[in-house]
Length: 178
Image (cartoon, rainbow, N blue to C red; front, side, top):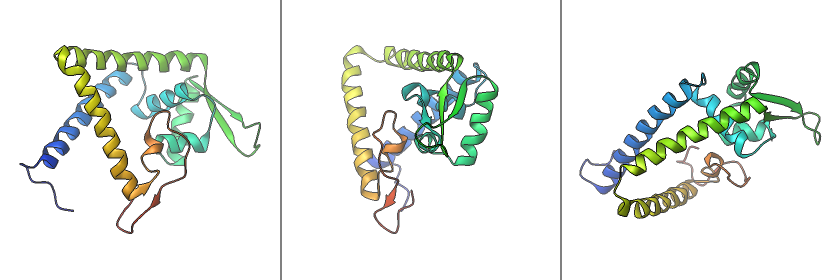
């Protein structure tokens, strides 16, 4: 696929999204660094705040990381008393992970910091443009989901907070990599 030309709408969309992702990532790193966490650890706390007591396999899928990366991530979080790991009552071969009381407080603190940043960003926009912007972002997200589904059914869902459990990514064409 050729790189979008600088003067196309697609090129402008791509550059704008890349800039937003980079800038929000910088903000996120600053937020979690002050709490003594990595971005991956903060993401883990966020997922567990949204859905407590996840199986390890579901948590790894939700975060989009490998089992070995998840294991290292959880070891540090357990060492810091933020998560606990227990045997799955339904399947003795599986484990479930949940936030401790300290982990819940830390996850909530991070969520509040991120929301405060988003509020600060919105306050800097004219009030009359906020609602159309948020609607446009929802439209954009829907279009990204649809375009991703054309390539890899279910690939988008595992990255979404509160996504419904689905099937693993199955490429729809040979040129797609998930």
